[in-house]
Length: 411
Image 1 (tube, rainbow, N blue to C red):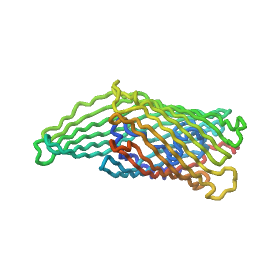
Image 2: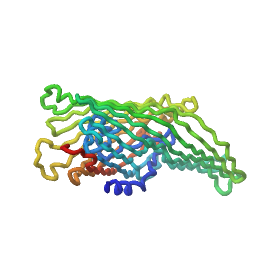
Image 3: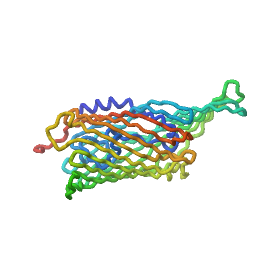
Image 4: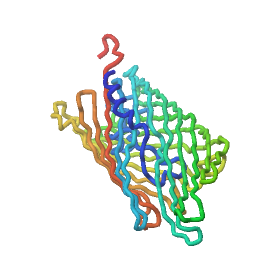
């Protein structure tokens, strides 16, 4: 598949994501962004069975894929962080992942998929200067990087009456690196010191999903040309974490023996709906919930975390009624909105995020697509007591399709 080599080459340099959010120092970091630029705008789109993309996190949606397809993407983000009179800017790239899907039986939606994609992202770099007469003036420097990714495969099936099911089987792995440094001035009686913590993760999980029949095909719903609902659950078994700590100063360096413990990561539940009017305007809504208040490390509840929820709403305009269309009439226009309560609790305060997005998709030919997305938003309180982050992101994803496994006499 010639296009697979191209997409792998384009995204192989973006395997390390950069997020530059101070809040990623808590728990296991941020959730990774949506897989494709289309989903960046439309949200999870878990109720949309799309034969041109494999971007949904609901594996049942892949049952609509009718061509062997490889898809991947990346996102560029410019962020501004403000706290009181202080501010800092960051720019980084985020790898959205790579998926490869092969339909073996199109009549029943039997699709096999392979994927590699990020799950959580840790990336922060914070420096503060303190003036203290008792301990002399000093700087504190907090830094963290890394995250968790998953690799695995998925299978889907669509029943003759229209119900679609699917599941992925996932292997989670990754590393995180944390450091805290105290830096005194040259004339201080105190000496600099650095604390480093490295963690390695590994674990198993799976994600079953379901998409209902199209109720518009079962009942006369007037102008509603399509109506489906979906549900999926991301189960993660206990994650094993191996740790190593080092304390370095001018006088000595101490490395503690490596230790291991178990982390209980909460499941993520997602519910979605797709409603299409007159085969022209499509509305997509998703709600996801993860009870991070139950997150534990070595049977101990983690501090500074709370339950996370996210609501997304997406709208796509594309006139599907007319078969003879110009190029620009084949370009879908998209608009999205999301409201999220993050899993972080800082100084007893919950952190919320509000994001707006818009984008479009360009058909390169009958099988290949390139999608674009622009997002802008903010998170954190507005009263200046904590860091508020404002950001603008630009995302691109490519989806290539080719015909494989055509049996004789099949049309």
